[in-house]
Length: 440
Image (cartoon, rainbow, N blue to C red; front, side):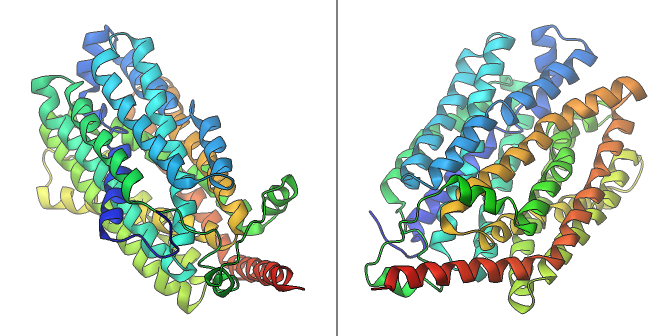
């Protein structure tokens, strides 16, 4: 099936469900780290290092070369087939984690396989998004994907937190694997491959007339993209911006249960509140960001940078707060706010990258930013574990890494001076290509 319009209802349902299921396993171990440590015979320090830091490196970092490869393939191959393959791979990773992860080495391997599926899916799905939706609609579409991702993480973690203590930490992975195979089939059946460049104003009319945009990616194109100021800033913000997310995904649930003395279920519920906030931030950020972009392009980076830097305040409150004795409403409010603020950036950052790059470079540049971001997510827990050894505990380490959001916010704010010019440059490139296509 092919076409140039946005996916219909069934295809959209398959898309958001599959994307959510890919992410559902990302944080599925977090509520039961101590249970896993007891099974594998790890001490408290080994728990944080081997199950927290190293397995997160397996999920986020080991698959990075494959993520970059899928980013390149997204610019050169059928993206629907690539995404279907990745959905199937994600289901296999979850299934084998449930049934074959009987040693630390096999657990590490299957976490890496799941990470390849998630990392590879990002450039592929956003390359598709760019050719399904016009530039002004991309932030809203990205917000939908962010909500799907957030929902997947929330459902996966809550499921693990509530059934893990009774059925074991492997059971939630099986629950993710079964529907994973089903949605992989649905993706193959109902998604369509759009024409590249179909939603660029400079090319859309030509493509409607049957003209094919077949410009191929070259090394010169990649080098030129890496000189674009907005691209540089987007790559620079990715590492400091994702370090806290890696730490939150791995440690927050167990930190609330162990250091803050909440039950596993209470900690999981509070992390669920954080996840709901992140989903609200993602959706709201996409909607508000799109309106700001339409009004004046420089306003979108101001929103992204300001909210990312401010996210430090509620997160530090949660880390240092006396959660057992303060009013539950205060805890819930700041936890929700800590989820909302940093994820506003999440639904805006990739649409900006799409809007300053030509169709043949988008997958590669999304792959490059995903590479840098996953380094932050992957090494964030390792950085935190190193600080823990120095400071003697999780609390100070978690607080220290959260401040990297201020650095990220600075790079995002700087984009307000570059994005309008870079969008004009991309549009001029599209007009030049259109003129070349129609030249006799």
